[in-house]
Image (tube, rainbow, N blue to C red):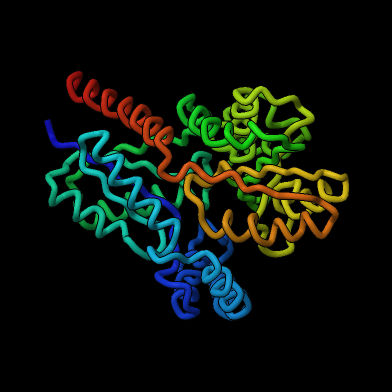
Length: 347
């Protein structure tokens, strides 16, 4: 049988926290039509004349606050995950980023050189979104066709409610819940509401009612909001939390248009003003700690919470390269290997 290999792909990071590298990263990221889904001329104007000039210095400062001796936490953790997963699976594993380095083209060449002819692709986004999972998958397709058109590929679907993923999240969170706490906030990355509507295959389900995510619908297959809520509920159930002990919010808003609600910044202020003294925050949309967790939540989020009267905010780490996450990925990927082998034998 053709040799199988695994490509891990995450969003990306600047090559350094210096402003020129941050500008380059922001431009590539925001010029993606699945991220900023506006006509190209308008997108180019907003990115190059408004957003990047305004945000580059601020973002560079934020990246410097989380940068380590090994570089970007997202990249360093991803490399460690790839090494450990390769040893556990016994298959070639390569890491790539949708934007900047390491590139998908470099990872594909590495896997091809290792003899891989059947590619499994794992976008490291638990929940589906056009600005994460969809753009990563499309980019891998484009790169494979351009570089190695004979290589077959199989995309592992979003794993937002895979038992192993929920078990791993619960394992990471459990030690923090062993101490007294007042509330657990699930903070997911936010999206513009129009992205939810664009991803709705029915054309009329998402955001049509307050309880749309509670209803059975084909829209759930690509509904980021419904999948986030399913993840949070799955973890809360495993941790045996009452409905009063946890809530969900959405962070990283950009621009003035409506994004998914409730907003994390406002939720943190509300919890602080309500008298919450020991707040735990977990960010299940991210499998590795990054700017959005280490700086947006652990620094700015803590300031918002404390300024509103809150006490202590503790960020629960992402899955990173935790042993429970390695075990979960081995199970998830192994199922895909078995399915691929069954399909190969049947054909």
